[in-house]
Amino acid sequence: MKSDVRPVVLPGSPPLTIFVRRSAKAKRLSLKILQHSGGRIELSIPNSCSVGTATEFALSKEPWIRNSLKKIPPVCKPQIGSKFPVEGKLLRIAVGNGNAIVRTETELRVPNTADSVAEHILYWGMQLASERTKCAAAKYVERLGGLNPVNRISIKDPVSRWGSCSSKGNLMVSWRLIMAPFDVMEYVVAHEVAHLKVMDHSNCFWATLEEIFPNHDAPDNWLKRNGASLHRYDFSIN
Image (cartoon, rainbow, N blue to C red):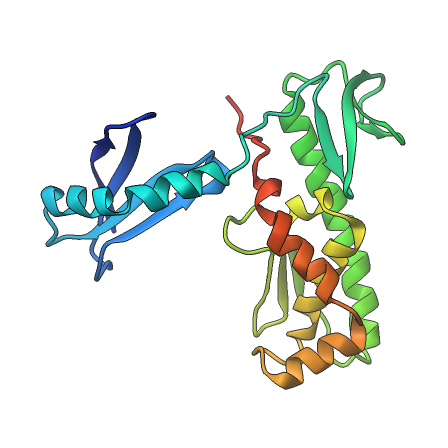
């Protein structure tokens, strides 16, 4: 269980606000920067740690914090006139007709009845991600020989992973992958499907993945280089 402590503010230009949380499970001080929240800085500390010790620790990490914050893309709230990536292509968000989002070669047209453009795009994106994941999963399961079926597929918005596969055959995929080039989501689904056969990341797993999705280095490297940019889009409902 965690409990909030008064934030620590480090002077400088700009000042840094660090949100401190006590955790009964924490064995040491742990500092992290949440890219999906525009660079929110969180410091978890054991119950036995004093605020003074936490402040000293934060001060010692200030150069690392400031350097890391420079690498985080600014948060962007999708709105009419701004651009939003779909399958790796930036589309202009425009006002459309009807009750559903319409995607063209250059635009993402949102119904003029939408109260929240970001919320509308979020629901549309999750539906698109669900459809694409189901199709991709079926394809790669077939390439595995159909002996390791998927039990359930869920589409979520995790912070620290793009997908997962449980021992029960449940697949989870991040909906934000619809923003990436088409082959990137395909790769993530194939990666998780390969876990239906081999749960670890042994040589056997990588051989299985190569069998159903050859040349997977390119989409994997794309995620490593550009994955953080997919979290710069803010879909929170005000």
